[in-house]
Image 1 (cartoon, rainbow, N blue to C red):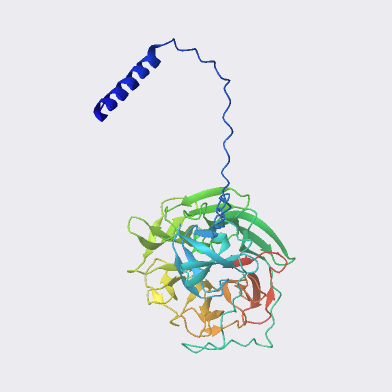
Image 2 (image 1 turned 180 degrees about the horizontal axis):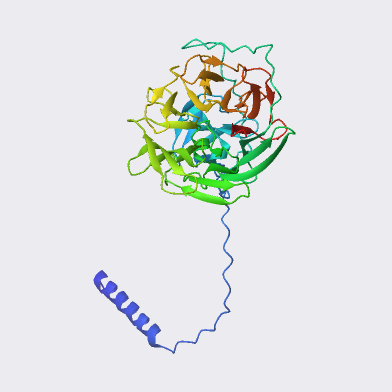
Length: 453
């Protein structure tokens, strides 16, 4: 047998054996084996990493930025270089303007604001702004009093010396003045009985009658020559002014309102004609946008224009004397005292100091008038001049002084002064001697005396 036959036989034999194994007997049913749960997976050990996993911090709400307190002007305001009316006016702040408050004075009656800008802060009276926010934590800003040592401009007028041999009886009668009531948020017209000394509030004048908000230093009221009625400017909201007449019983009669805004000037400086039948005042005509000096019947009736502003002229302060009317005008570029005839004719400039003059007041005999004048050293002093403006002399030389008013006998002059620290009413004789306080027992700032009767 050769090799090829041998290999063929071996292959056939293997095929037969394989076929026999497949079909020789039935397949046995396998015995089921119990299911063994798979072993738990072996936890893979993760080696600790050297890089720490940062924790997510709990979010903290941001601290709100505190809102600084703000001051909003209730009407047009005078900005001052310091906390007080004895400081120079630095500009105007229009009504409804808001500025950040950066400081206050010691008693909180004046606020330092970042107006017109933070680099040039100025001061406003707290009573004339609406404060938003708390001013309790504001710093108290100390400001040195206005410098008086370096004179500039015209030479100061030498104070009149009191005549040693001239004696006057003590001042008597009743005089009115203005104070501010913090409790009632209103200016108050007060009556002061000089001897014996006592005070009584008579009428509320509102938050800002024109003479107060415009700083005319003229009285916003005037008692009639017979002392029965008083005419006064009522500023109910610090914007609109009403000229009102009230009798001793407190009965009111509104005479006129021009509906002007604080910026326009409203109604200011009422004064009675010598016969008590009419009242003169300064008012704004909205139709023309011009100030006029008006008169109106004291019992009511249409107002009449007496004298019109010339060009951009503005008025402040009126006084009707025996013959002439005094008023203050800035026509020459400075506030100077002028004179009119009773019919509104013949305007004549009486002072020519080229500095601020104001609140003129006739002596009872009509031969002289008192007024205040800003001096070369920056202080305000009471002056006395003849009816034609000649012979001007200075009666005061301490503190700042405004708003003179004569006693009925013509021997004394009362005025507002800062010489005691705050605003108070003082009195002196007509030569400038025997100066003494009148409102020192009042306990509040007193200003704008008028209508001594």
